[in-house]
Image 1 (cartoon, rainbow, N blue to C red):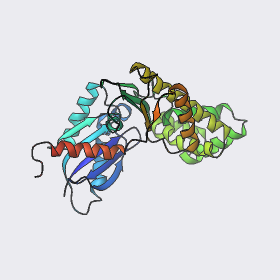
Image 2: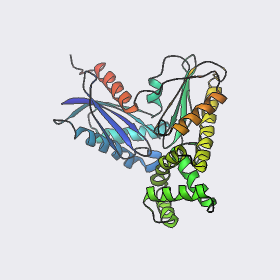
Image 3: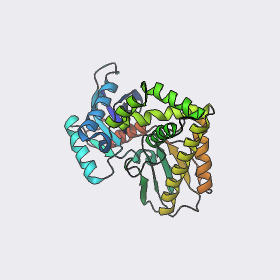
Image 4: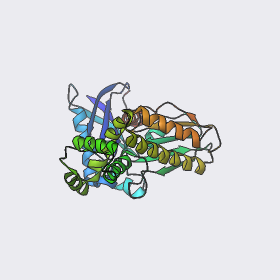
Length: 308
């Protein structure tokens, strides 16, 4: 069974979609992280390959990959893209590969003309274009100097906050929930895991904070309001760089943290409307891995060897 594959890879997981030549989705699967700046290039390439294998294993018959498109975080720098492309070519020999950043996927689904997409997952960033098609991005270069308001940032901020307020009832309750979710007996155990792999810990704290905020925990709500403010600032900086800050343009949100918490979604919408009052909130872009699969299909149908 010949098919094309689309990937959406980040610092937590890699989503994969297998699609036939008529554009029908055959299977969905996932694998480990594939952001090379967070886990290293070899592990990132292995994460893409594992995601493909997990997806193809669910097909009723053996799948043959005709083309693939991968949108991967951590590949914006040319040297990173070239290195990842070489590694993917080794793991998918003979398969045409279209390698893009994870931010390129949602932008490609937006209407022509000026637009901005805010992407909030393990990391955070915004990407957009102006009226003449010039594209710019803001953020998304890792937690050391960016990724404000991301799942990683929220998780890290939550861990700091609960430990700074040991006598607060809301901090104590949030602390218990975090440790339970991480499977840690105490903060000494959690600290050891953070020291070993912060990406394995901090993003996993986000759903705990989100659920606590929805349940009315004031500390969790404060953490999410602060994150929403940081994210709105990212969108504003990009809009200013594109010359769109005072214009009407579609503004979309996507990523793993969006749609997970009514409180967070509402807080983010309020902050975005406050800093970009003329922007029009657009529907969430199509699924990123599915978008990548459709790009792979378009590339294949337009290239040599396409089915007639």
